[in-house]
Amino acid sequence: MVNITHVDLLRLASSIPYAQQLQSIANASTEQISFISYDPSFVTDILGPNVSQQLVAHTDWVAFHEAGVYNIATGKLYATSNWNGSFENPINVTAIDIHNGNTIESIRYEHLAEANGGAAFYPVGTPANSSAGQQIVFCDEGDFTNPAGLVLVDPAKNTSRVLLNNFLGRNFTSINDIEQHYHTGDLWFTDVPYGYWQYFRPAPVIRYQVYRFEPNTGVVQAVADGFNAPNGFEFSPDFKYAYVTDTGSHTFPNKDNLTDPATIYRFDITDDGKRLHNRQVFAYSDVGFPDGIHTDTNGNVFSGCGDGVHVWNPEGVLLGKFAVANGGVNNFAFVQGGLYIFNAQNLFKVTIKAEGRTVKRDFGLYESAGGYGK
Image (tube, rainbow, N blue to C red; front, side):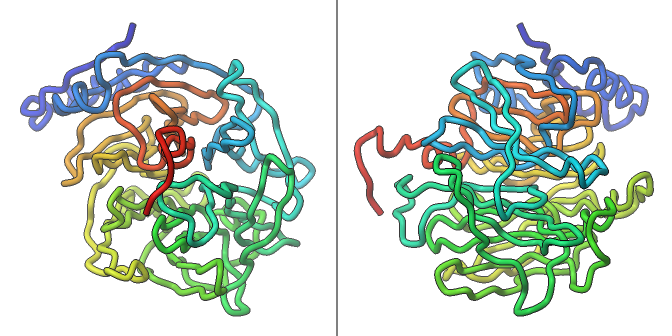
């Protein structure tokens, strides 16, 4: 049984008390997801007829913070924990066995100091509908000893190696989120000083930017700047657009500025898949700020915000929310048939109709359906 609230937009447009009533629904429970529909398509196309929700795990530490990458060989989903203020117990990778009771394991990998975002990685030249050679690339925020960078991990073999740890000799600030372009194999990532703002990285010495890295040539380029805090990164399913979240409204702890960005920007990607242009404001979060971001196969945009996961259609119109109390959502992961939602110490599983952009490839569903192709 699920709770779906249908919003009256005309009433909301002229009633602050009604808006406060909706927010109280979002904050009602720390043990379940509430669904808030701003458009009928949220129920029919996103949730579907078999929607369900369940709190599947709770930990004594903030195990469920960022990343959220499935690995076929291990059958596990890999998240990252949050910085807890101690170098004695740094950020760990949280392995979730989604096929065996959602059991939790905390892991450290060599060369990976302070993991944050992550994505499935495939060798350059792998067909877009092939899962061959799948590994995980993690963003390493670094610390006072280790530089920020990108680290490639094979969780099945327990091996790791550094792919990138500088911009032509200059230190990155605190690399945050990453995605791989299916057709070029390039890695696109954001660099933002949350490690510095959380007191485990030195002061920044480079702009807060979005970068593109060619893992087979070593070419690295800055492709977008002008952000307060470039955070989440995602592609549209047709790779025509790139989305970047700017979490500038939350920088130093307890020093929020509500007039700074809590914004998703959309860029057009050039035909060669290497540059960005035509920056637009795509959406603005009404609660908190948009952090982790993912698209579904229909181009709808999902982002973790201050009261849960928000969903916008490709035109930037808010369709609905997966609402959860206790700090909202930093990130989440699409899986077969649904979502895993990261709510700090809580892990929720939601069954929905919408399918994530990366699910077929990351779960090896192209192979099981009958082979590869360009």
